[in-house]
Amino acid sequence: MLRPATAADRTLLREATWVNVNHVADRLSHEDVDRNPQFAHYFDTFPADGDFGYVAEDGGRPVGVAWARCFAVADPGYGFWRADVPELSICVFGDRRGAGIGSALMGAVVAHARREGLPGLSLSVEDGNRARNLYLRHGFVPVGRDGNADTMVLTLG
Ligand SMILES: CC(C)(COP(=O)(O)OP(=O)(O)OC[C@H]1O[C@@H](n2cnc3c(N)ncnc32)[C@H](O)[C@@H]1OP(=O)(O)O)[C@@H](O)C(=O)NCCC(=O)NCCS
Image (cartoon, rainbow, N blue to C red; front, side, top):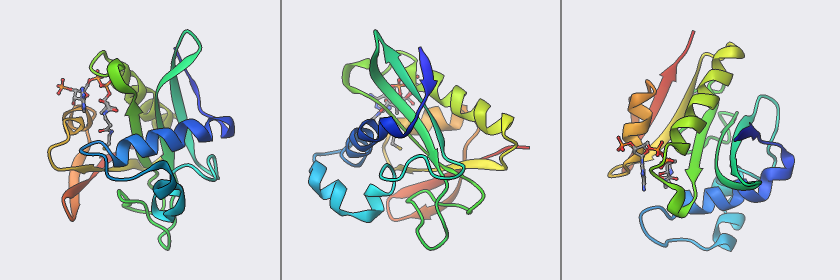
């Protein structure tokens, strides 16, 4: 079951951000993520104007989340493209991966963006992350490079 994400989900978004920054290797603790504004801004004030997201639940427990934040030029995320193009983050937890939950979340976020008439969505994906296939399938294309990651954009409307 998917439901919209709210401010009550900030702890969930914090956990998802922590998982995402450690997806290749254990690099950072929760405290490292909290202390670094470049990570903390993915969850700390959600939802600010224009932000939205969806939580996947199984038996009332969250198993994944996808959310979009509207970062400013002065405070960009890793996948920042333009201030009018929200940046997408997605995470499915542990052994729930590979069962279609991420695809369902991605579909919900893209449908929401279309309904709202947004010009697009952006994201960042590091080299070697299988998630790239998911993004390509949903129409995201690489538009820029930052270190060992691609910025990908889905153009809508
Ligand atoms: C990426 C992720 C959100 C996809 O969710 P999911 O529920 O596993 O996705 P689905 O079951 O719908 O599978 C669709 C695609 O997800 C990706 N995927 C599946 N299992 C994955 C895994 N264990 N790790 C990374 N990506 C995976 C693949 O692209 C897959 O398509 P493919 O089988 O054609 O390669 C999820 O695997 C995840 O949270 N991974 C770790 C964190 C992460 O990498 N987040 C994104 C940071 S850019």
